[in-house]
Structure formats: C-alpha cells, structure tokens
Length: 507
Ligand code: GAP
Image 1 (cartoon, rainbow, N blue to C red):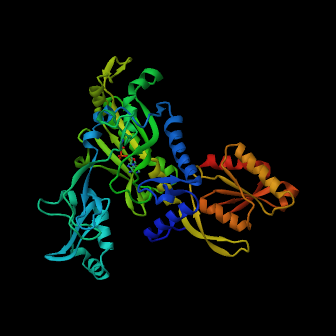
Image 2: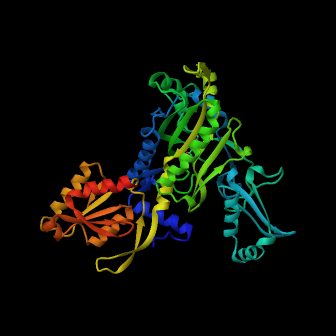
Image 3: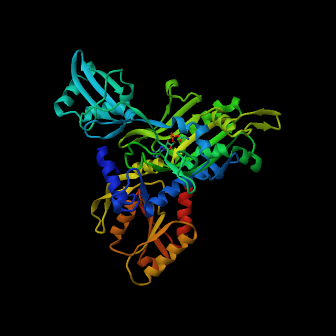
C-alpha cells in the first residue's frame, strides 16, 4: 500500500530533495547562491511541466471549437497596465520589522489569541496564508504545555485571529520571527519595471507583464476580425508572468517569475452566469482527471466582501498542499470591465456586433486563470509516495515512487536489457528507438541490477518498464512491469509501442 509521509513538513522536505536529486527543479543561478523566488526546471522537470501545459492546451484549445490560442509579448505598451488598473492597484501591503528587519506582506501576518474568559491561553503573531492556517500555525508552534492546555480546553476557548493590516487603530502587529514591532503597512507595487530603448527615463518606462490576461484583451479585436470565430468564444494563452512578490515561499508556489495558463471567455452578458458556472466546474474536473484526488481539492466561492468591485463572481480551485490549502487557479466573472477599460484608454471600439441578432454590445468575460508552476507543484505533491517493492532477490525493500498520471509522467517507458550480452542490448535499443519514433518519451538503461533500474524509474515516475531477457531471444516477448501494481506481463516486443499507446489512451 503506497503512502505519503504523515508529517507534511517532512513530505515537503523530501519532495524538494527529490526534485533536486533527480533533476526536476533547481534553485535559479544556484552556483551564485541562488535568487529568491526564481526556479529552474531540470531535464525531468521541464518534461513534466511541458506535459502539464500540453494537457491544458489540448483540453482548452485543441479539443474545442469555441477556443483559439494566442502568444503575446511580455513587454507591452505601458498604457495597457494603466487601463487594467495594475499601475495604481497592483499593490501588496508591505511591513518591516523594526528589530530584525525582516520584511512581510501585512495581509499574511496574523495576531492570534485564544482565551478562556479573561485568561489568555495563547497569544502569538504568525505568518500564514489565511486565518485558519494562522490558528493552526500558532497552535502548532506553541510550547508543549500550551498545546496541552489548548487541547484540554478546546471546547471552552474563544479564538481571535486578526490580520496585521486590519488591526484597530493604535495596535501594532509583532514580528513572527523576533517579536519586534512592525512598521505600519505601506503599498508596494509588484510590477517589475524596465526601460525600452537607450534612455532610462520615465518616457521609456515599461513593465514585465504581471499576468498574461491583458495581452488577450488588447488583442480581442484582432482575433474577432481575423479568425471568423463568433461569440461565445474564448482566447487562451500560456506564458511567463512576473511579480515582485514581497515574500516568495513554499518552493515554487509563490515565485517572482512563473507561468500562467489563462482563458478569457467572451459571451453575451445574459449568458455570463451560465458560463461562469460551466468554467468553474470544468476547471475543477480538469485537475481531478489528471490525478489530483478530489478530497484534496476544493472549490471555494468568494463571498461578496472578497470580490473586486467589477466582478460578479469568483471561485478558487484550491489544493491541500503539504504546507496548507492554497489556490491553484481562480475563475472569475469579470463582467465587461476589461474591454470597457481598454476601449476607454485606447480610444478603440471594442464592442461586438452579432450579425444574427443585429445587436451590438460589450461582451462579458469569464476568466479561468491557472498557474503552470502551481499545477506542476500540486502534481508533484500528489505523486510522492513511499511503499515497498521486491529487490532482485525478491526481498521487500522501501521505495519512493512518483505516481504521476501517465499523461504527465516525464518518461513514459524505460527499456532495459536484462544483461549486457547475447544481443539483449541491441534488442532493447530497437524497442527504445521504436518508442521514440512513435513520440513516446523513452529511456534506455543498461547499468546495474535490474531491481535498481526499476527503482530509479519509480523515483521519477515512469509508468512502464520493459525488460528484454533470455526468453526474448527465443520467443520475441518482453516483460512489461507496471509502476503502481508492480504486476509484470509478457507481450510481443513489436507490440510495446501499441501497448503503451493503448494504456495512455485509456487514461
Ligand atoms: N489574470 C488573473 C490573475 O492573474 P491571479 O490569481 O493573480 O489572477 C492566477 O493569478 C494564477 O496564477 C494563480 O491562481 C496561481 O496559480 C498563479 N500565480 C499567481 N501568482 C503566482 C506566483 N507568485 N507564483 C506562482 N504562481 C502564481
């Protein structure tokens, strides 16, 4: 039976170590000490992330008649970001500790107190993604005596959890690291600035895009005029986005450079509620279909207070990462806000004329906005398992196995000769090359005992291992070993490609 380590900190540490050891994810510019919030995908990581993006593109663009794709430039006319509101509003509240000089996002610092009547059982200041997580973190980091009291008095306790940027006037939050006083919150714009051309003055100021969405809005008219697509339809884009996050954290979860997979789905205003519900549910199911367990996934509808002033609805697809439940993707009903803003700032007419109903209107937009890196991290977390498998002598040994959905696995099939003689390497290489020619990511390995080779493939999540052995030389069959069930079956060597393709199609 495969398990994940119970201790979530431990799971995250093990996963980060595996990602480095096996070439999934490295710290950016590591030989120079790294750069906070930036990550590099190694040989296996780049395959995994490409498979995630390909699965998204296939579902969202290739399999639908009502979607088209786009690939916009990262640096755009800075007026785009004035129209979108990013220049004035894309701010995070920044606080500094007057003591240790640590820097935090004020909306991620919480003062947590637990009282029984007038008696304060716990009072602490913690950094966390939301109030629930803050309460858990405060309780978990208390000393053992306090933890015991919290458990004993659980039913009688009154909890107060207040965000640092929502404290009553006159109260100041304290630093979670040293207990020092924090400065009042000030606004910090998260867009990276750059200059276009030789002059470094305000006339040349530009931004690295903080989201791919605005390139889609800016091209709405181009797409309508050139692609003969009719409403309702969507435009999809995958690409890099950049945010100067105050506190990048949790491995790749919050980075400064990351990739988004965004859809802007344009529809008649009267159909916006229907399409919002459609995309919210479809996007949730996409993650389930690729192997995220539905009990670790949540769909959280925002309440009215959380909604942007122009939005009619918003839901987050959340995943229970080892470090807490956090957003994978947001799905928002953005009404006609973006097209109206861009029409006003550009002076262009961005309305849509329906030649069947003879109606002209500004379409409403449903925006499912996902992170390719966050999705990849969720698939990595979900895949990590520890169980036992037999070694070469049949004795059960602990193994680490990445149980990726086969569509996402970086390597689909590994091919081994049992021994390096009797034409077994040549026969195995033939199968390996046939797999490659068929577009299956295949890996050839002839080094070490076969049990060790299986183990190496388990650790990187290869679903099927094919071994050429003595019997192959007499009857032309090979063994195929399944990563998850460990079952082995014999099939004809010239059927390996069809076998793997059929298994992939069945998932
Ligand atoms: N256009 C809407 C938009 O950008 P968002 O909630 O700010 O919305 C959408 O971002 C998605 O992009 C998030 O759900 C997340 O998956 C990803 N994302 C946002 N900031 C990120 C960061 N700093 N690091 C990694 N992924 C991030």
